Length: 65
Image 1 (spheres, helix red, strand yellow):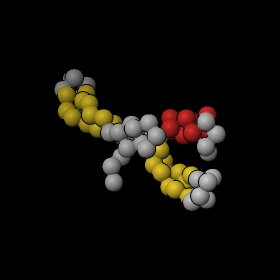
Image 2 (cartoon, one colour):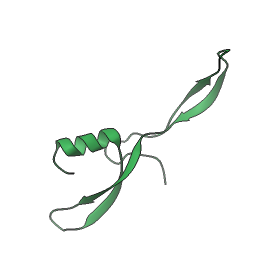
Image 3 (cartoon, helix red, strand yellow):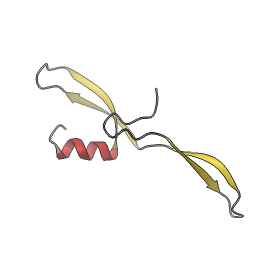
Image 4 (cartoon, helix red, strand yellow):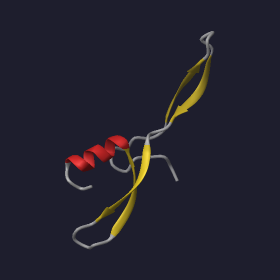
């Protein structure tokens, strides 16, 4: 399963690891993901989504969580 937030679309980013001598080697920046259960008020079904910390703040702001 890909490391992607289902709300914000954040995904793994690529950059450089820098040593003391400023030598560059590739590294990955992973999003801060959580599994969260969301209940659909119309159907009563419970969905488990992968959401980032910023996505959780967005859901709380709109009253979903």
